[in-house]
Every structure is written in structure tokens, then in C-alpha cells.
Length: 346
Image 1 (spheres, rainbow, N blue to C red):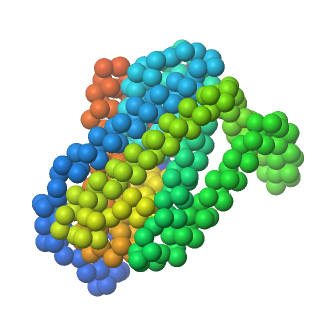
Image 2 (cartoon, rainbow, N blue to C red):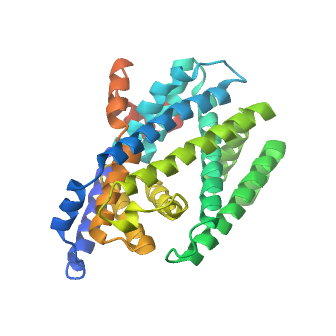
């Protein structure tokens, strides 16, 4: 498994290198301007952005404690460490390491890992719903003089429609999750038994996760925390772009105008590979800033690198410290995560 993963990473690296080599004559990039942009950054904005991102980890811990409340009353501060460690593992080892967080929470609160995998599932749903609501609402109010304004409006409408579909799907699963799982299994089984079993298990896990919301009050609290968290993430993007005081396209950006960039960044991070994923994410955000806002490619690339640091890598020092204090081996936890949620639980 480890050797296959290494070969895959090397293959991706070689493909990227080949693409850059083939297009080297078309790429006009001034490294002097790039370094000048980094030297002239207003670091107070970066500090504010990092503070905003760190506050979201505390909100995540608070929301997780709400999800745990039907089973066990847990202080949010008890869950901050697993958030730090879990997101550090994702930053260092890729998206597969995301399962470390529920495993660490389960160990901390002495509950079955399967129950926390279910909570993780519902957490993802709230993240998606809150991000979509903020994303679509802000896009609908994007300045009319913004380049590609029609794309912003269309994306906002599609995002709102997607949010409504997610809500409807969640209600259906909550009411009749067992029936939906059985129906999906019966439809897919003729094509692939393994895939049918996997889909049915995921639907049942999602249904189990929805049980974490035991009352209307818990739902409202979790929804408000989720909206606050993604609002803070949006403002962290704004602060990072405002740090580039020599680039008007970035220094004067509004909250609503950052939403497409935020969407591109989130999309690029979904299939996060170790190390290589950092560069693909920078490339995706730089291309978005260049296309959406007309920012020079050098400034856009420098900003993409700082966005990666602020939103993704800045947690690493706190995560490593938390891992040391809690006697957690990130390397061992990542290896267990690659084996799947069940094995990572033991």
C-alpha cells in the first residue's frame, strides 16, 4: 500500500513537471515581482487571518460537543486538541488522514469510534450546508462591475439550489434512512455487490450521524455555529487578500467577491495529496484570482501561497504541540487512517 502510494505521488509529480516543461515558453512569470509582492505584504492582515482561522477550530470543538450531547456531556475545550491534531495530520499526510479526528475524539471521550465517524459525517453535512448558504448569499450580492459578474450570480443560484437539495435529502434520510439504504443496495447490487454494500453502509452511517441532532435547539445551535465558522473563514480570505497592498485587485476586494475564490480553494483541497497537494492548491487559487479579479499572476501566486499557509498550514505548530502533549504519533495515526476507519479505531 505504501509503495503504491509512493509510486502514485511520484507519477503525479512527473506529470506536473512535464506539463510545466512543455508549456515553459507560454508561461510568463517574473520571479522578481513575485518576491517583491511577498516582501511588501501587510503582515497585520495575515496575523488577523490566522487568528480568524484558529477561532474556527474552537468553534468546531464546540459544535462537536453539541453533537455529542445526546450521548455524553463533554466540554468543548476537551475536544480542541483532537481538532488541532486532526487538521495537522490532513495538512501533512493528505485528506485520507481526516479519519484521525473522530478516532482521537472517541479515545478522548471514551465512546466507540463508529459513533464518532457518524458524528464526522453529520459535521461534513453542516459544513457543506453552511458554506453553501454563505457562498450563495454573498455571490448574489457581488458588485455588478466585477468581471464575469454573470458567473457569480449563476453560481450563487446553483449553490442555493444545491443547498435546498441537501436539506431535502437529509430529511428523507432522517425519516426513512433504512428504506433508502435498502433501495440503493437493491439498485446497485446487480452492477457491483461491493459498491452496493459501500453505498448502503454510507447511507446508514449518515442516518446514524443525523441522530446526533436530538432536538430543534441542538440543530439551531449547530447551524448557527457552522454559519459563524464559515463566515470567519470567508473573512480570513478577505484579510489575506487585503495584505497585498500593492495590488489593487486584491487589496480592495469585498467579502462577496472572494466567494468564487473560496469555492475554488475548497474544491482544490478535496483531493489533497501530501506535499504535492500544496502546489496544486496554490495553482488553483492563483489561476482563480487571475481569471476572476484580473490580478497579475505573480501577485496571485504569492497570495495563493499565503492562503495555503493561513487556511491550511498555520495549524501545524499547534497540532504538533498538541500531539506531543497528548502522546499521539501523527505518523502512526496516518498509517492507521490509510487502513480505513475501522482499523483506525483500534
